[in-house]
Length: 415
Image 1 (cartoon, one colour):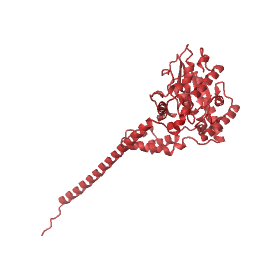
Image 2 (cartoon, helix red, strand yellow):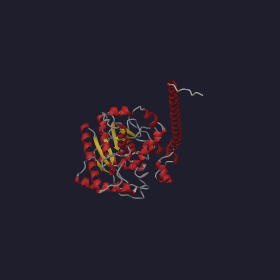
Image 3 (cartoon, helix red, strand yellow):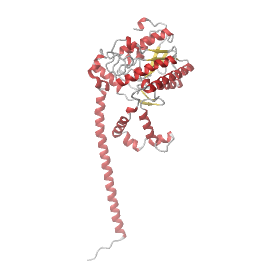
Image 4 (cartoon, one colour):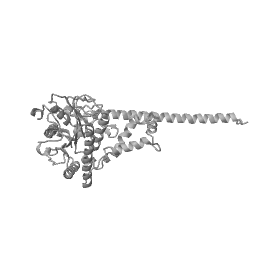
């Protein structure tokens, strides 16, 4: 029996068949991988959908304190209170040039943030501001923003309500408070607004709490996360922002990974490794002294910029939980943060003795001694009553020193 001879054509066909088989196997593997990846994203999408629905109905404050909140919200029914706190706390910040981040715009029943970056106050004025009005820009951290309060109960709204008694000229207060912001970021925000030709008559800065934890290193919150994100976007050997943007914008990886639930999972896990490094945990004497110096320098720089544009700057050293702490007036005190604040405020007294502040500096920290509690709705944010007290004191001192000229501000306007 003869064996068929192998010809070049036969060998080629065999190699072609093996190659086709290999390609087919590879295609099946890729297809299976894509199916698994798709199913994984579907599963994660369902998980995130359920979690988002749960978060929309609750918030970290309600979960942490529960029924204990009844004592600081005596006139706020629990379902409405939960909705208000959810609107306040369930908004991630958004990136902002130079100042790292700002409050994300939103429309809610209790919390409304304009696209321009300010939270609405009662009888909110127009944007851009009308120069015919008395326009007041308020800067500060989350206490100025009014976390834990609806729009009409923040310090800015209390100022707006009282100043509205001046019927000769409309008063418009703009609340530019941002959670975590301290005096350096507020100075930059103020300068950016001036550079954009948004020039108020008065710029009011409410500070103290955040400067006690961040001004010492003069490093904004979330700096580690932003630093890590920049390294990822920049890549290796790319120094041009245009090339970096082109390399990452609209790429296949962006489409298949970062915008899918798997990418969301990756991003949600990454900040947890660096969140604890956002701010120094404990202050020492050196950092406290440094914090006071940074706060003083920022006041001087703001004053210089304000003078160039004809703006009246007002600096308010706010009440802080750790300064003259009274447990009966503060139901949710954080010992570490209170220690920072106590050291910062005592050090600031020494700094003010060595470098006296001007007529436009208001010390309101002692209000904690003369105001009945409770004063805080969580670790550091003011109750509606205490916000009104702080606004009242600001207006009283400003009137006495001639910082705010109000023609018809009566006793009825300042409770």
